[in-house]
Image (cartoon, rainbow, N blue to C red):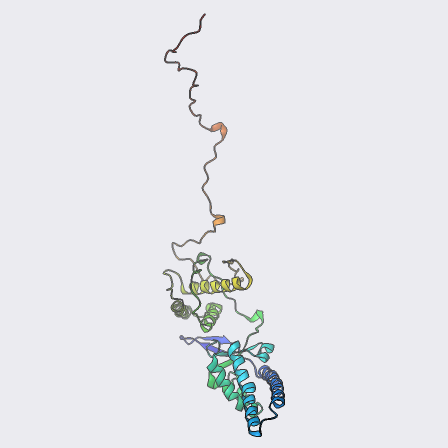
Length: 319
């Protein structure tokens, strides 16, 4: 089991791939690369038959380097650690901190892989993977990478607590574009294990992750909000945005019910009341008055009848 160690020396789990699945993935990748290499070689031989032997040898070397070395490097860089074989077996290459690899990582892995995989038929890579505690070959050691499993059974994944209802929609305008994948992974793994940690250690980790997230987003943690609640609310906001982009889901999805036995982790601070949807807001209604008990308004005298307390004016009709 691989571990992502935080600043408080608390290990967060990663799931490294085992040697059999890695070997089968590499075998599938090599088979696909060899098929492409043979096809390209046949085309070059047919089109460059008029060249001299030195030029044909140079083209052969260039084809070997481009297809069998440059091809895997380009695929790993563009797919962020995936390949045909890894997609088939649910694997992925990541950095030691859990983030996606870049060109320099793929370049080091590909360059060393020529020696430990192609030239030695994978013997050196197998020995290095068996000796390493995390199953890494020499290319992974020098590049600072690790092959992990992406497909994990749902029953073995940790439960991420939902955000508190009183923070619903609080971070809708937060800019999350600068947050790296490694920090998202650390936050998610912390939220799944926060109830298993010592309270002081859990509070320190939450504070450090919240500070890192605030630096990346450019918005400080609001006063009075626990760091763990802030992390859960921001993660929920990110998931809601991804759902809207993928499926057109509504802006705010209702919090997921916690499993039985899960302790409440986000009590609302004093003086903060959960927001009430507009559809459920109560509008004060005027008190209904029964017609029988309604007060009688003074009736105004008819315009053609004079009041009783003063004499009538005008001509009296003849008798």
